[in-house]
Amino acid sequence: MSKVGFIGLGVMGGQMVSRLLSKGHTVTGYNRTRSKAQRLIDKGMKWEDSPRAVAAASDFTFAMVTNAAAISAITEGSDGMLAGLGPGKIFLDMSTVSPSVSRALAAKVRERGADMVDSPVSGSVITLQEGKLSVMVGGRRETFEKVKPLLHDIGPKVTYVGDNGVALSMKIATNLSLAVQMLAFSEGVLLAEKSGIAREVAVDVLTHSAVASPMIQYRGPFVLKQPEEAWFDVNMMQKDMVLAMELGRQLDVPLPTTAIGNEFLTAARGMGMEKLDFACMFDVLARMSGISK
Image 1 (cartoon, one colour):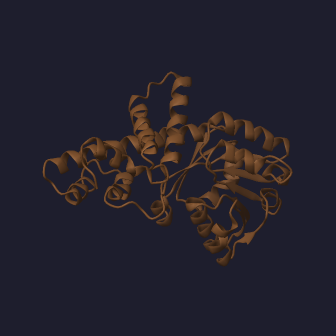
Image 2 (cartoon, one colour; image 1 turned 90 degrees about the vertical axis):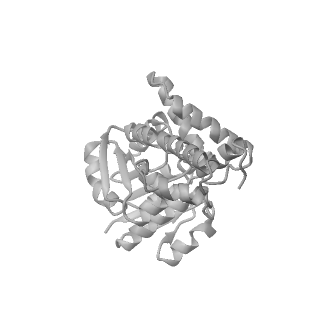
Image 3 (tube, helix red, strand yellow; image 1 turned 45 degrees about the vertical axis):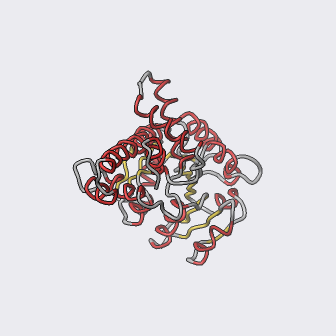
């Protein structure tokens, strides 16, 4: 079994640590707020007071944080993760940031004699709990082969995409569809509702129809009731939509439905919904349709 470090113990990161512990790995963790990690400590996770200490104690160090600013905060400085790396160690960044930010970080990791892969995931809390998470990996092929067994302990589908940064391009290409699908689903529900069909019936029919992607199946019911804790809030979703539009501009790929979806996320923030799961795009469209919950 491996000595694993994990930095960022939020909804997804915490669930991943639980899976790694259940597979018999020794896991050392760090989170900006220690109280959020207590449930994992109770399960056997070791705790360190800095990202540097986590990396120093581990052969493989994961990070899953919100954005590029958070990555900088956990990697740079005397207590940063980079300071704890050395020859033979591997850093696996599961955060969704721009490919260029990831490649720049990989260069810094290699200056320490270590190596790095970007390994974003596709899925949700439910797919992770059910053991159906998909992992994309970008980096050196030989490093991928070293981390592949460990990643299989997190999710069954592990795909090597190419060099550093390209897994993030794949992740961004995947995530733009989440908001677009959610908006289209909301349109269908509201059209049915204003035709006199109960919202619950419309959701049931659509989530069992030809349009029911896995995302629609597990997130569609959120238009009836939001989860107690957002799986993927508006701010996080909009960050990924902006990354997609930036990448589209760089690569000359028009992204019209992404741009429209992004505007609805902006509207959600304007209505004070930024901490809700991004399924609240439904509520924005409902208000525009003259419907309130």
